[in-house]
Every structure is written in C-alpha cells, then in structure tokens.
Image (cartoon, rainbow, N blue to C red):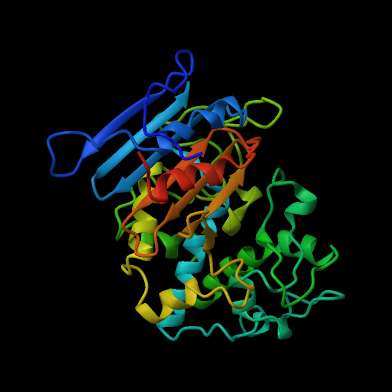
Length: 350
C-alpha cells in the first residue's frame, strides 16, 4: 500500500517524533513528507535506539527524528560514506592528469600488492574504485574493531582468500589502497586533500577526518553496538580511508547535492563516476545506484561502523537529497531502508 502523508499514524510518546520544517523563500513549512511516516519504524521494527533524517526538496528542507538522544546538529561516524569522498578526490586527480584510472596499483605503490593470488601489476585504479579488484576485505578479519595502519590492513587482506577478479565484490581494502595512492600522487594524506578539495570549498563545517582522535566533536549523542554497549568513543583507524569520516546530516546532504549537481567534477568525470558497467550495474565509483519500485534510481552510499548506520540518497541531478541515520550498527533493515527511500523519491498519492 502507498504510504499516507499523515501524522495521525505516528507513534505517540515515548517515541518522541519531532518534525522541523525550514521553508526556503516561503512563509509556511512544507507539508509533512511521506518519509516521515516511515522513520519511526526504524526504531520499532528496526530496533534502533533512535533515528533521524534530513531532506532537501524543492519546497524546502525538513528534519525528523524518532526516539530519544538524537538531534539535527549531531556529529556522527559515517563509515563507508567516506568512500564517496575518496573516489571524488581520485577522479579530480584524474581530471588534472595526475593519474589515470588505467594506472596499475604497482605504478603508484610498487611492491605493495604481491600476494599469492593478487598482483598489483594487474590491478588498476578503476578496479579499486569499482570493487572489481578481487582483493579480500580486511574487515572480514578485524570486524572493524582493530585500529590499523594502511599497510597492516593491506597485509591482512593479502593473507585472506581473494574474490574473483573482474566481478563486483565490495572490499574496504580497495579504498585503503586508494588513500595510499592519493598520498603518493599529491604528497599529502587523503584527509588533507579531501579537506582542501571538498570540505573547505563546500563549507562542510561539521565534517572531518579525525585520524586517531577517539572522541566525537560536540554536539553529539551516544552510539551503541548491536549488543547495546556504548561505543561512542572509537579509534577511527579501524576504517581509515574506507570509513574514517565524521560528519552531520546537513553536510552529507550538501555534499551529495554538490557532487551530483556537477560542482566537484567536470561532466566527463562525473559520468565516469556514475558508470556502473565495470561492476555489472552494482556500483559506480564511490556511488551506489538504488532502483526504487516506481522506477526512479537514486544515487548515494551507505555507511556502517561501530555505533552508526547512515544512508544518503539523491536524484541524478542532486536537486533532492535525503540522509537518514540510526545510532547503532545493529540496525535490522527488514526492507525499511527501501521503504524510506521509496516514500521520499517516488510519486506520492493522496
């Protein structure tokens, strides 16, 4: 059944659902959005302590939350959404002719990838960007709980059984290597380059690469593991270039709107980013397409790291963007994520 745009079906306290409308050039807040009716289910059915969303639409912006201890301005860990930032930097370097996507890993990191089944001379940067390298995911062993140097992460991956080269197989090892390539090409860390090229120009004032800093910036709520334990303090080196980012709902909306709106990459390189043929339709370069039941395809990424799950999705032109988050890594999806995106991006019926 289509979701109804109504408030009367929302759970009462203690669900504590809040809706804040920010009209853009209008005297009244936008009508209650359909996605707002799905958000409480992330708490009741998805077993998240709290959930929040921030959306940008033609009629304005709106924020909604369900549960307690979560706020619009909170900083949180974005996990693998970091990969979109890293891919953007790599594609900017390609546009500047400082590297080529057909370059091998060996060209930039000689001797690093030499495992029993993996050879950096046969792996291209394109394969890393699209998760078609076949490199194993180091987090399969560490479970995202052990702080590592990039070199340690790569060595762990090379000791694990690889996936089939040329087929899509999601692996955070790919983006750890891309972070190392960025440093090799520019002489600066991926964090410095992302700050210079993306964070500062877009004025993403709530976004940072914390390095080894374990505390979240203020304001922030608490973050919980699937077993309910508090994991608000976390060493971001558990993820590195594959998932280190700390950010806010507003900053993610702004970033994806700018990226898909053509403000960060020349048209040719944005088309490269959106090309899913290498990954057989599953992935572009730091972007994932999601085809919704109404036929609309939205673009973005998700991120899961200890204490946090977040998803941003946007229309191809970046004019409409939705970011939602829950304050646990134990979010039980049950199709709720797709329901939320469908409610936001598919045509609404009365």
